[in-house]
Length: 302
Image (cartoon, rainbow, N blue to C red; front, side, top):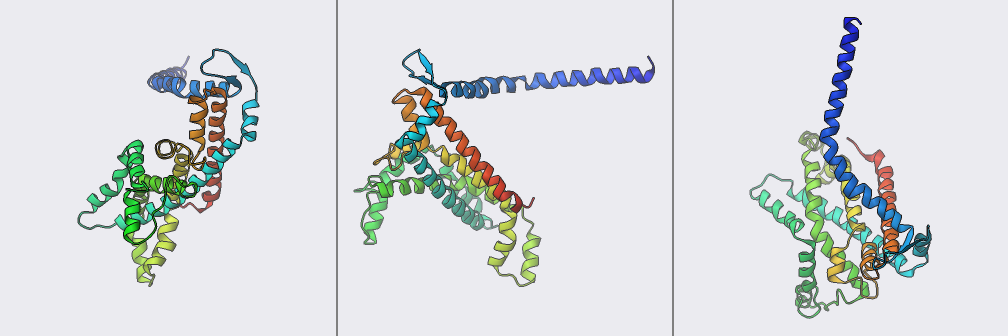
């Protein structure tokens, strides 16, 4: 064997050693994925194909029976409709408000760091604590919001007791809670836009609105796609505020998919049926995210 052959063999041994060391360092991640992701998802799919009550060790195979039952269950269809309603309102208003706040806070003025922290502060509050506070704010008799309405001579509203107002009330609370989080994403996007673009546009006579519409907004498309996708996923997983503020009522007007899953799993103990609901949520989120990528991919400028 010549010198070149020995060199190639030595390089192969070195590469194998590097691969072995790499997999050794990655093994904790693989173990974590196997225990906390792959096994739970696989077992959940297995359960979705069975009729299993958590109080019984026996379970029977039903195939796609749980999925077919979903399509025939009025409460599931109501929960799906309410989830889409909540998602549409929450994503739109959160995106708009977080963008407005980010633009207003993208300035170099005294105290701007304090203002940014102030707007971000609701994000760090527990959703359960925030929902509890907002339940008191929405109180029809002594709530702060109705007191303000009476102060300006407007009628008080039964926010969480009226099927027409319960979901808008939950959306308002959710927008308040999450705006600061998405504001940070937009703020990062705004600070990544070179100021020279705006200066050149102003020299050519562009108004502030034209600068925003033709320069800022197109360059914020990557941030916007991230905000929309994350807000959409979080909206489909809404649970805490529903659990605390309305418990799915009144008259199922705020019954959403995750709360419906919770009811089936931990109230009625139908684990197989609840697992099927969970996989439907995953499929809906996947399809919605895929559509977002397809619609926005051509508009994104990196």
